[in-house]
Structures are given as C-alpha cells and as structure tokens.
Image 1 (tube, one colour):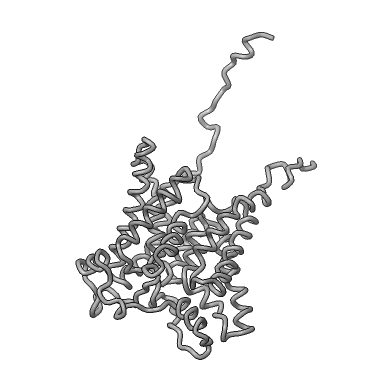
Image 2: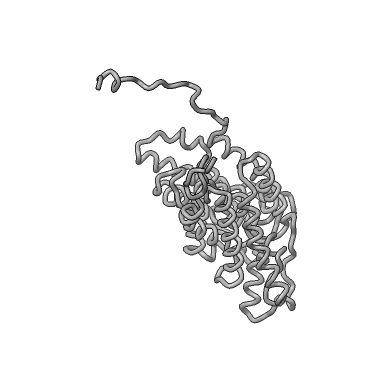
Length: 356
C-alpha cells in the first residue's frame, strides 16, 4: 500500500454546516424579555422590597457562577454574558416570597449556580433545574421564611414602603409580620382541610386571573406569565408539548376530583391559576437541558409534572408542588430519553433501515 494514500489531508469546506442564527445569550435574552411584564407587575404589586430581593438573588447567582469559574481558572465574563446564571437567579427570585429577607435570596442564588449547576459541570450538564433545586433546598431548610406571603401593597399606595424602607425591610426583616402577611389560596385550603373544615364552608382568598393576591412574583399574574409563554411559543424558543401536557396533567385530575367531592378538592381553575402552575409549565419545565429530547418524551414529561403537582398539592405536606414535581420528572428524563428515542433519518424508531 502506498504511504501517499495514508497522508492525504481531508478536504474541508467553510460551508459544511448551516447556522440557524441562534445562540445561548440570544435565547436567554428572549426568555428574560418574556418574563419582564410579569416581573414588573410583581414589582408594582409588592413594592420596593420585591425589587431589592430580585437583584440580590440575581447578583448572588452571578457571583456563584463567577466564583466557580475562578476556581476552575476559566474566564468568567464570557460565561456570565450568556445570561444563563442571571436567568437562574431571576426564576428563583420569582419563586420566593416577595418580602423575603436578603439572606434567603443570597443563599438561594449561590446554591443554584454553585451546587445545582457548576458542580454538575456547568451549563448543559446539570441533571436538575438549578432554580428549582435551590427553591426546594430553601423550602426544606427555612420553611417559615419561605411561607411568609405578603398581601398586595402596590407602589404609591398608602402605607407602601419607599425605596429606602424597602431596602430596610429586606435587610432587617419585616417589621410587623401579622400586619402584612396573607395566605395564598393553596396554603389557605391546605390549612382549613387539616383543621377538618371543608372547602364549602370557608371563604378562601379570591382567585384573581390578573394576579392581585398573595403569592410569589411568579405566581400572582397567571395572565402575564401565560402571555410570556405564548411569546416564547411564537418565537419558537419552546414548543407547545410540555406546557400543554403539564397544564392538562394538573387540570384533568383536579376536574374529576372536584366533580366527585367539591368539599375536599379544589377546582381545576384554582389549580391552574394558583401557585406556580403557569410559571412551571412555560418557563421551568421547558428547560432544554433537563427535559426530554423527543416530542413524545416531552408529552410524557409534561403529563408527569402536572400529575405530580396535583398529587403533591392535594395529598402532600406542602401546599405547592411544582418545584418537587419538576425535579422528580427531571430525574426521569434520562429514562424517558432511553425509552423514547428520536428517529434517525432513513431508519425507523428501532434503528432499522427503512425499506425503499
């Protein structure tokens, strides 16, 4: 054999691959843009303490990312500018009580990027959604601080804290807890049922589609969250499969149970418009890294998230179940991807060549 044949350099072409024009930073920017209306509405609804908690959480997430990259002797700025750490901190802030103390946001932001993201290898390597890992860790570790919900007190209204007072509330804690706290619908229902009082003999907090009620920034306005999700669908950042399946997974068991026993089970509308159902369906469960690759797999994943959310809300110890449900289904993602594999071009789903 001639040696000349072994030393031939393969030809390459600058046009061997097509570029779709997308990038991580562009995708993250579009997601943040879709989140902005609901976040700004939450800022107005709960005032300056919510604003301060938001930026503390986002900066903590960025700091945790930069710290890990420094330890690995990697340049931090290019990674920070992709927006993934900022979005993680943003989503976590939306899941916290609006007037939570600063240390809750700081610990959560650091935990999300250091433990739930960088310890797994960074962006694209994490098995679980970092923001939800941090939320669950905070909920288990600090249950009292994580369940101090605030009644709406819009900026500019009588008694609403100004910029400095908002900073003092976040840094020093809520001055008079009983004067401003309020129960969420899910929390109120869980408490009343645990006291033996059925839901037909109580007056639960009003169900507001526009979001003027107690809750986190990301659960108050189902309308704005859903609108942001529709924008992501329109921009093709996400597909409809996971949001549709997750909301269906919540609504169907809720509808059946409520028809059977309305004194014991909340209605489907209460489940869909309360808690983080919309935020989870459009912005959290759709995480590219931690959800299945195939459309069928995404439907299974979304249904699992929805069903587990309803089960945990109805029978679990916590009134809200979206974070737990998403993490449990994140653990199932490798199994789903193994069972539902994408079809290779020219072959069937079992890998056999298609007959011509």
